[in-house]
Amino acid sequence: MPFVPHRRVVLGALAIALVPAGAALAGGSTKVAMDEFTLKASPKSVTAGKVTFSVKNNGSDRHELVVLKTSTPAAKLPVSGGRASEKGRVGASKNIAAGKSKSLTLSLKKGHYVLVCNIPGHYAGGMRADFTVK
Image (tube, rainbow, N blue to C red):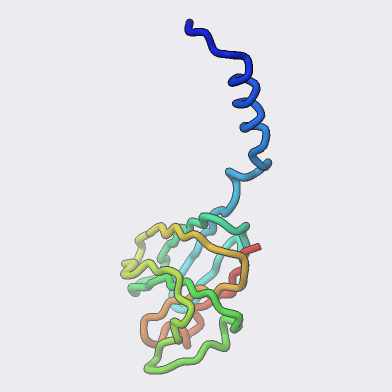
């Protein structure tokens, strides 16, 4: 076994001790269930960091998940051409076929987000949800 100076061992242990508790747990995961015409997230809030959305299309139509960072409530986004404004878009999972699932991982900062299916007419039909990152 090679000789390791005592100082290196102590400094290595100190560096490990300085990592904040729970640092590896930042972010989280959320299940998103969709069908005609609902979109439900559970849980509705997570901690800032890497967030994974596990999206399941329980419907018979194609859907998508678009994640928007905005202070506007989910039901109040501007609409044009049957689609909600995607101002503040941070990511999306497109073309989720009926009965299929997809995963979307994003680095999210603290704030209010809106989750929508933005296929024309789907947002207006009710496929939207408020989401919070703490």
